[in-house]
Image (cartoon, rainbow over all chains, first blue to last red; front, side, top):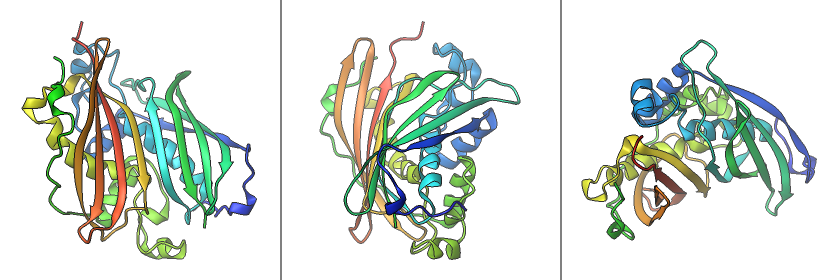
Length: 142
Length: 149
C-alpha cells in the first residue's frame, strides 16, 4: 500500500513522476469481463479491422482506469477522488504479442483547492501518441 | 447511420437495484491491475478511513453502463455499436462507491449532434443509493464513426 499523502505536503505546480502501465490482449479480455463492456473492437482483431481500426484497441475506460491508478497511488489509500474527467484523444492499439502496449501517465499539481482538495492535470501517452486530453482529477486528502 | 436526434432529452427508467460487492470490486481492481488493499480488505479500508472496501474511481462505469446499455441498445436510437468509440468521460463523486451499497442508475440522453462524419451521443447518469443518497454522476460522450471503408 502506498504511503498517505497529506494536504500540507502538496505544493501547487509540483510534477508527479511518470508511471508506465502495461496493457495486453489478456488485460482487455479481463477488463471486458470485469466491466461488462464486450464491444468486439476490444477483443476481435478481424472485426476491429473490418470497421476500419488498425488493430484491437483498449477500452477508453481501461486507459482512464490507469490514469485513476496514477492519481490514487500518488494520493494514498485514505484519499478520495471527487472529480475525474478525460477526453479520449486517440486509441491505445494493443498488438497480438506477449508485450502488448504501455500507457505512460504523468501529472502535475494544478492547484490546491479548499476542503483539503487538490486538482491534478494528467497526461497519458501510448507509443508516443497522446491518448488522453483535458485529463483532470480532483482528489480530497485526509 | 445517423443517431436519431429525437431521443435528446429522453430519460430512461432507473435500473433495478445493483448491490456493490467486495468480490466484484476485487475483480475490477484485478482487471485494471491495481493491487491496493483498500479495494480488497475491509480492515485495510477502515484503517485508511473508509467505511468498508471502496471501489476504484472508474468502477462507477460498471453501474452507469448497465443503465446506458439499455439506451444504447434501444433500436429506435439507431446506434451501431461496433462503430462506437468513447469520446469523453467525466465523473463527479459525492463519495466513493463501497461494498454493501445498493444503488440504482438513471440515464438521460443530454445531447446528440453530428460533427462531420461523426455522431456524438452524450448521456448523464445519476447513481444513487436506494435510500436516495446521491453517490456519483457520470457524464459520457460516445462517438459513432462514419461508415467503415
